[in-house]
Image 1 (cartoon, rainbow, N blue to C red):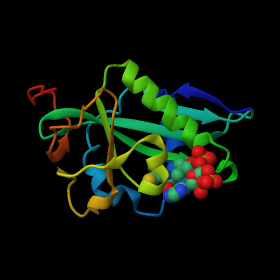
Image 2 (tube, rainbow, N blue to C red; image 1 turned 180 degrees about the horizontal axis):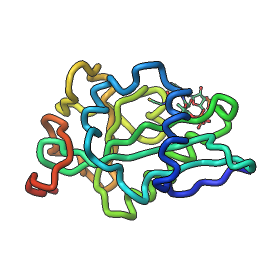
Image 3 (cartoon, protein in one colour; image 1 turned 90 degrees about the horizontal axis):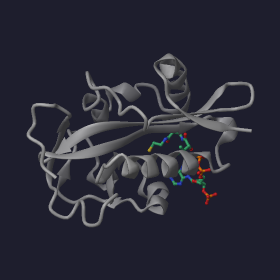
Image 4 (tube, helix red, strand yellow; image 1 turned 90 degrees about the vertical axis):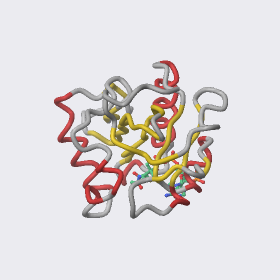
Length: 168
Ligand SMILES: CC(C)(COP(=O)(O)OP(=O)(O)OC[C@H]1O[C@@H](n2cnc3c(N)ncnc32)[C@H](O)[C@@H]1OP(=O)(O)O)[C@@H](O)C(=O)NCCC(=O)NCCS
């Protein structure tokens, strides 16, 4: 049996260890990490999956970002332990996360990832949304949580700051 629970501060390093296992070395050099530096993930949306022994077997985190001044969620990292991949756990983490994000009032979500995987969750390429370089634009994907939420949203993706005037 695998159960999902909101990530607590005490889970942080177990989740980091899972990410280290699942991603290539040097993951923190990716430009998406520069958007996370010094910013807390969104509490309540980050989830940890544990098996019946209590071992962390999957995790998802979300960060807030601005896109051309508009608030958006940055999905990721998401990872599933190699011994549990292909069992639908990644889909469960993503679908639960998207539902929680919508319930929490977020209008739009983006990520940097593989379109063949994320397309099944409704993510498509975001034209005009500029991640810090070097990022392949074909991997910059988004989906609405409210109708047409991405329609007029363009520009650079920047680190979340309470000082940026809110714009829907
Ligand atoms: C990507 C990841 C989270 C998916 O988790 P999972 O629990 O294995 O996924 P699910 O069981 O929900 O879905 C499995 C399906 O996704 C497909 N899939 C997995 N990763 C994929 C990818 N990068 N591109 C395309 N398809 C992918 C599998 O082939 C499988 O396809 P099928 O349903 O046709 O058999 C997991 O494989 C993982 O942790 N990978 C390493 C870390 C990573 O790449 N994270 C994503 C960053 S973009």
